[in-house]
Image 1 (cartoon, rainbow, N blue to C red):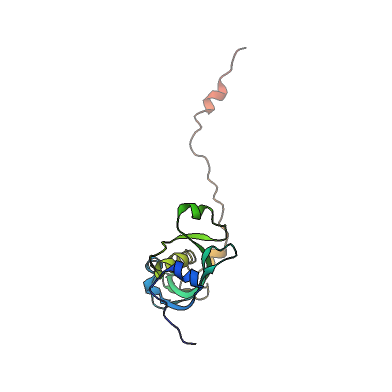
Image 2: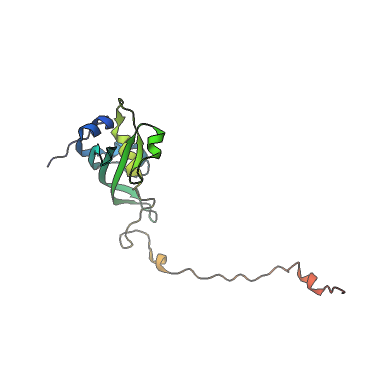
Length: 176
């Protein structure tokens, strides 16, 4: 099966009314917020998107995203590739009131009936939630010795060297 590029803009409301399914890819470099976190934004994000209506006749967008991202290892600062996969379910809403009444299985996506949206903005937001905050090589692959990670910290006992200013009060006797 050949990879097909996804359209740059879509009208989610019209696609939901038509029950359209899109399968293809978008270049990782088009996802600006995710790209800022990466060492390199080369590669593609594979996407399966389903626009439609659910049992309650709500307009929805469900999807699966997967890609490999190149991040800086937090130990050695060399690039490390991590696989990222996510699934999402969005409810297409026109007003804040609709967003408040949306079932909890859906995250709201504010749309306009007649306007198109940048598909990259939607995918960027969803992928951003799945990119790991920190990336590390496996200990055997990292250029920095990670053996210190498994050792428990030693307790440090600090002796009190300053005199206690309230010690003088223990010498005071009260008359009854």
